[in-house]
Length: 572
Image (tube, rainbow, N blue to C red):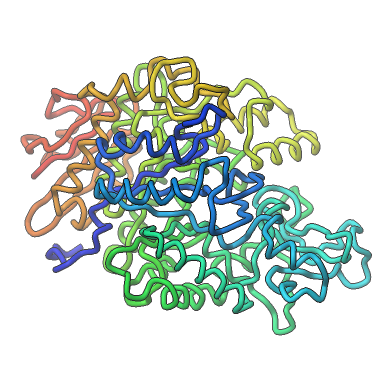
């Protein structure tokens, strides 16, 4: 790629790092075992010390908590479980005082089935809000509730059918996720205007942007008479794949451009808009993130977190690092001249990176956590740090199904066992891939509940918190926390890290991941050993020998040898 100069005024988020707080598991301030806004306020100095620029707050809206807050019953308030609207205002002010921004989760593909909009929609087939959701009669010639009578054969992301029968009306409503999360009908302009008004209300309170949950699913492929179509059968299941009808549907760009005009116009320089987009391709992401199209600033794509399983996430297999390099490289190249990448290993929907992509054994846990962090933060894009990732938190040792809390995991277990699967094999897959791995409480110290709560935590604390915790790492210059702090500082201080071009090296090597970042005549060579073997660095990359070490994760190095899980950022 050509060496290009720094743009005159690159967007602020090109040099920013975002930290995701999953409030339920971050810090409990009132002893009820559930994290809350008071707890977030107590721990802001931790974020300031880390050096992050943005706090992305997972949902704190009123909710029945069927999906831990992603089933929202009121978009303009705070659930008492998490605190109050006044505390949220206090959080905005406290972040701004520290030079940080607040990004809220925007969940508008669906609501809770307890939302007043849905309750009114459900009240009658003649309700003015009936068309705010996707209501359909059973298939022609079939009775409501009869097996196969659902309007389409679509499979839900959370197992089972996407259709739930309403006994009172004899019609079905659509839910791509849990049955308690009915999908909003974005074809209805009243729905869109209600969403935009809500977004403006939050921006008026000082919020600095939105992370938009599954936003590329809001447009469904609807026929001229409102019909929806069956998807191709899924192997081994009595359902079909809905992707062709719901992923990046025909009006999604129109809707996002309208949202931008109605909500964002005039505030582009200060806000951050991130679209979570399952199934999005590089080519589609170029359209979504092209600044000239005025849609979103960056997208969360899922390609790299789908490389270690086939079909179902609960059918995992070992990851080939060559596949990871090919995926990352494709996205780096594809968005090099138009658009922007979101960079992440972890979030509330993924197992812990050090257990999944690294090595969480006592010997290599610290080294692999810092190696993975170096690899991610030195790519071109905006890095996202998920709570606890900066401490090297790992997957939890769930003993039985009773330890799990996540609706996706519980639904999968029930369905798989009902279809004859070995319960122990199902549990083994859940231990590796369940979202609950990301939801165990943040490990602040070595006290009985890791400093998270004085009560009983809603989900057990990982028993390794005695050794792996923030208090133990804060003043340790070799800790995972200290290394993250150095990486974040490097992005803030070095324009080449934020804006430089990316060139992949050694694309076929099974363990060594290497690339260059280049800007205005400056070149950084990043070399990471993603494995437990020693490699002859001088033979693989002669230019690395004698280069200036900008940042490393293992201290004193042998210039000619790359040790297990070693990462180096070199100036050549």
